[in-house]
Image 1: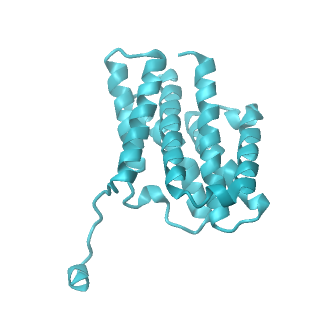
Image 2: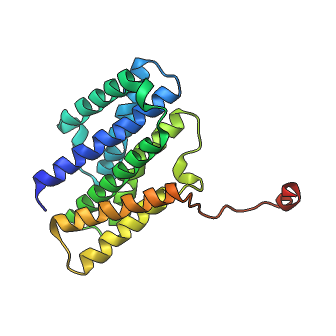
Length: 211
């Protein structure tokens, strides 16, 4: 795959996730610095976790200042435009879906380039896609969205599986990356629109309380 396109894809995903992180910060009434920290955490957190797991050192965020700078820029932009943007939660959810698809694809591409097996490829895609969001939710004292019934990590897992299937079928290059990103993004958007939920276990006596 063209390394320039992979890099541009990674920067784009970082910017998208930085926006969603900054919006979360504004919605939680954080100050200016808090919003910037959230933008950096969500924008770079997943990539840092992914590179660490894959043994890529120094990690991309520390090798290239562009990642941090783009997160700061997005954080400042959201902070200044918050009266017009933060209330439009549906738009933010769709942006988050784009970021999820991009980072799933990037994680899979990096793992495949290192010769990892199918499980490693899928895991790399998922960790890169959801890592920043997990940190964001922990900072907000919330149960991470990926651990609840929301169709979020599931879309990333299925996107990673598609990557493996297409790769085994002989698909390669940018088409493989784009297909994975688009598939994951579409699944997440559909899950949000139709409110798809994974099953949640019921506890003893819960049926009686529901009546």
